[in-house]
Image (cartoon, rainbow, N blue to C red):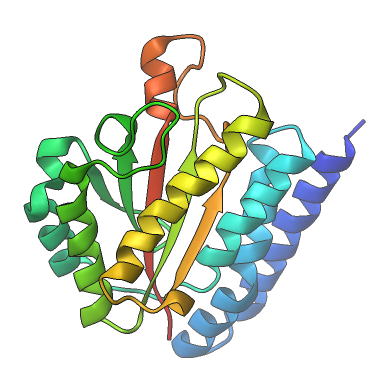
Length: 217
C-alpha cells in the first residue's frame, strides 16, 4: 500500500507528464513558457518525494522545482569560463551545467568556511566576484544560494548555520552591486547529503554551498 508521500509523488509526476503531453501541440515558444510556469515545480515536488521518504523531501524538491520552473535555455559557455578562470578549478570548485538549465557552482567546505563559522575565506572571494560580474553583465540572470552541513549536531544548530553561510555568499554578491531582488538564499542543514555522513570524507562533501545561476525571460 502506498504511503501518503508516495501518492503525492505519483500525483505530481503523472500531472507533469499530462501537462507535458498537452504542451506537445503548442508552438516551441509556447511550450517553453508553459513548461517553465508549471511542470518544473510539479516535477520538483514529485522527485523530492521519490528521493526521500519524508514530507521534508517533498518540500526540498518543490523548492528546487520552483527554480527549474523559471529557467529558460541559456548559453553558459562565457560565464562558465570566466568563473573557472577566477581560480575555481584550483580550489576544487566545480562549475557544472545542470540538466535543468542552471549553472551550478559547487563550493566545498575546505575553501568556503572554517568549522562552525560563516565568514567567507579570502581565497573564495575572487570566484564569487566573477559570479557577481556575470550577474551584473547579464541582467537576465538570477542566483540562488543553498547552504548545507553534515549530520553532526542537531537541526537547531545546522539549519541556522547553513542559512548564515548561504547568506554570506549572497551578501558578497550584493556587495559587488547585484540587486537583492535577483538573489535567493536558503539553508537546508544536513538535508540532501551527497556523501556518506558515516565517514569523514563524506561529511566533508556534505558541508558545502551550492550556488545556482539561472536565466529568466
